[in-house]
Image 1 (cartoon, rainbow, N blue to C red):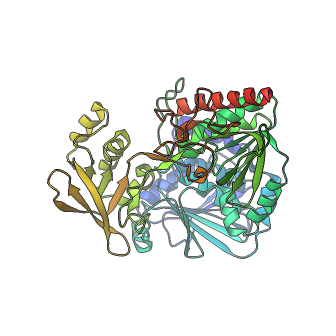
Image 2: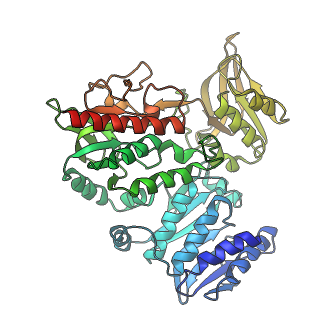
Image 3: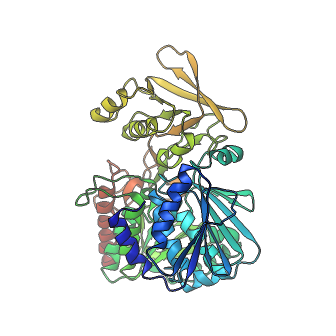
Length: 518
């Protein structure tokens, strides 16, 4: 199952195992069970502290549990955790085997203090770059707290279960049999949701912090670059972010980041955070900004209020709140979100295997999504508002060569149709004739660009463009002195990672220059 190179790498990791444990497999006669057996056999042969048992009685087959002798840790994988989930498997092996996790003592204590019974079930797909964060967080909680059990389920392998629960988006998390949440979640976010007093306690702690010299709002490429450049000046620097990494976390493949021929969004996001942590930067996660209170005097302190109830003050600000997927804003879109309406083809595509889907948008993102989906689903219909697609010629040529793809140009989507439970069609208007038509399908992937996260700034002295983007000068300063902005949230054209990083550095240098002149 594992090639020689992968075995060598895994063998090096397993040297960190300090406690014996068992892999208890539940298998049947199917091909996937044989494949899993081969993988688990290879793993057990790499460490004398790992024992493989084949007498598991789990109803889900193939699956396996990681148990210490005489103790169920609560960590279970239903499926074969390869692809993006291979890292989740390796971490689970190490943590069950006694290797300490890389989280703070405070977080460990919070997990251990959870009371009650928690049975988490997470549906993932092997192509989902967002799923490992959830799987790894819940696995760790199961390892540390005997009241927590977590089953990570490959949705593509357990289709009947996915259909029964109507799982149309991954990761989908269930707690004690009921829907808990969907989409990427960090360990901190999960804990905040199950430990209801945690957010309030954290907000109170944040509000007590002294004022910063530079406070960066947002943790994407622009925010990370701004934090590094500020910290290198030796000034008091903080980063408040809803999730560190921002939109990069949802990016599957990155091939135009200069000097790095290929990487994936979550890997780059993790590298950004590690680089920021190399400096004396106060990183505050799970903080969504809701209000900006300008300084009352020139050179005074600006205040940012957050959804959690926390507020932070700073002599200067760098606003790097980024952008999010643009929505169609048509009837049925919100009603059927995660019930057939999706925004991440890489994550959710495997759940629509053999089905009919539409991709909305003919730019590079839309055409790339349609090409990827065509290899998974039964049929793809690409719908573009303009009379021609805007994607690169090479992508259009590839798309048109695929036998299970239809392209509809000059069409305005008017409604998402469904049966009350899930999507069953889409209605569009032919712009030239005004004729209304319908496409029968089971899924819709929206790929029509981005919208800046600036709603919280409306009514403030920070001037926005007609599109809601922050207007900045050559040094990155906004129309409010002492407040700078960078990245996808600004009017700077060409929303690219490399540009956002440069703009973040510029804004931070501008903030430092402004501060020392006051």
